[in-house]
Image (tube, rainbow, N blue to C red; front, side, top):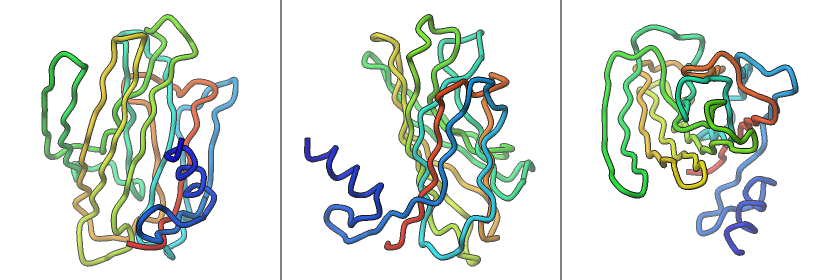
Length: 193
């Protein structure tokens, strides 16, 4: 019960537990009935220490039970990203890592391959020190999806090898073409450390 209350307080701009860190809502996008091929947050204010994206997602991919999303900063689609992940499905665990990628990855979303249209993946993305021009940008992502017992949870880290401040980001489906109705993406600014 307390975690729900803390989540509500944090998302409304109150102080988070234990540190006085304030989360402020910047923008929220909820996908309508026609679907959406991308989610864009632009003109991101430079007044925060970190950014956070909270979301639920489902794509129109029909080739696999689960999908993922691609995350790019400042329209950069060059091979300037690296991804590392640890994941498990309740029976086993594995890890992987890739350098020279054209995007970071948000794991894991549901897809149309899964029978029930009410199943969505959920995730939280932290984008650290997004305006610091003295360092590359890092992300940490916790996400997963459950389809009545078959699912995975992922802990993913990403690196954008660029020192520019992040002023925009775009999220697109990994294998699918569109995010489906009711997928929702909320961008927050984090004031404290």
